[in-house]
Image (tube, rainbow, N blue to C red):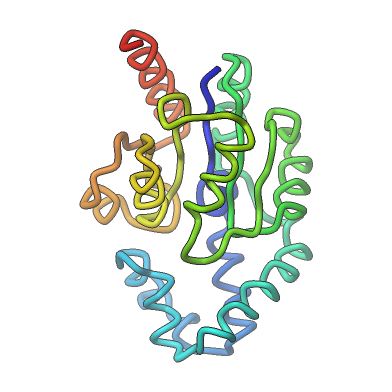
Length: 217
């Protein structure tokens, strides 16, 4: 069985605007109200770390803000859209008998509500939420261990450089999608296994990876 492990925010859920709005409500920083400044952060390797540095947020407060932000997201989740074409892409992968998972810094309950609202919750085998801001690979590794997956049988899909780095740390292939947080230019500089510019291309990339993997075994 082949598995696809998805990031959530910026990959499945079009939540970037909501995340920036929550961050602004928590910090009241005018920098987060500046569209040009927010766009510059999207083109930085360590966009999240850079934002924390610029906003002068201490480490302990960053953890508190993440926890508080998840609770605020719970109130907003009903208004967050699914990326166009992602519902069909997930259904296609599910129909093709891929096991689908989510690993995210968001809360498990938020993701479950979102997927249920969009009618795709049943397509996923499991959701692993609550990943730390800088340690997502640990939760990916846990998900793989619990489901007896290996780097040869699973592929990761994400929208940030940290997703690419987490996958490389675990020696697993990764599809970098270009409709999320980090820009395509920045993602390409970090050499993901595959790049997808829309959900249809993402599915095609995953199926092609699967066929190559089968032929090599």
